[in-house]
Image 1 (cartoon, rainbow, N blue to C red):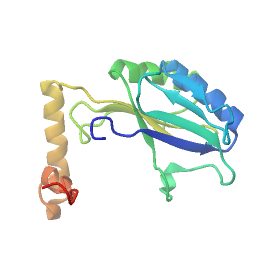
Image 2: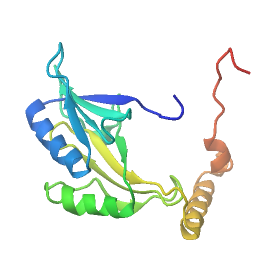
Image 3: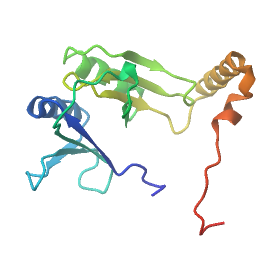
Image 4: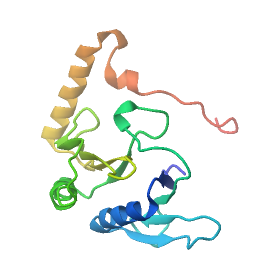
Length: 183
């Protein structure tokens, strides 16, 4: 499991047909493929980045109840979902070529977020129908020296803001309990 991460995530949406039209455009723009359950006891449309290879995917299904989400309220449930971008240029192109073309204003415009990771670059936006909060993010495999410097400076700034907790990098890393059958 460690080497693949999340298998899939499914979202229940308020207006299924309108949502599918939006996600077809969004995932199509990103080069993903789609497949459907064809109503085999439930209705869902799935989107996968590397179809048909086993890879994580996103499912969309009709909601039976609920209201539009507001991520800034931080209500119980998923806060946002982040998708991988190939590079910073794809984040910028998605911002202008998809979000602006759809008339969507990002909740956070494309920017570098050095406190997250060296070179972390992302745009954040809300699904216009159901309000699901999305992020398209790029983290370089090999950050530049400048990106590493900005990351270290961001961590240092966090340390200065919160001297009571100690060094950010040490406070952030936690040991989790392992499996009882493994040392």
